[in-house]
Image (cartoon, rainbow, N blue to C red; front, side):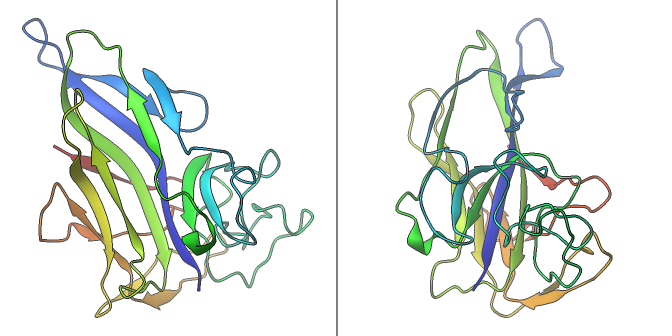
Length: 225
């Protein structure tokens, strides 16, 4: 079964006191080389370097044709050969793909059963007297997930060496069906058992994760306070 969920951008917003009340970016990672105050990472290898077979991936994938590419399961190849698996030819009958022709690089999880690592760590520091106010992450998912196999993911944050706190959690809702955004080719698909997102330990879901927007290639943004 294809199991897809992704992290594309980490944005840390801070406030400087007592001089400024406006938010400013104190940390950033978009996997396209535009990081700010990202001082260390662990288990964030490029796709193809971390093992696994077929569509298995846990790491950074390239959002454009060429470079390190991306697994076929992850790519929306309906309008363009995003995965590179079609030798430049699109795959119009593709029915599952989170990232389309306009999506840039991102961190991906897919078919994790065959991959030994299960966590990625991003360490940000060096913003002086700024006080962390919130964390924004762009997330997406598409597929028929299962709660019995613990499909989903948890994102935690540790501030100044403190205990890790859950800020985002995606879990399967086996009672629901999700109609996803159109693939780049215009096709619309629905799947049972989508992933719901819970923020800051809330027991009420914020909503269901979706695929990228076809026009922009962007994933949806969610903010932890």
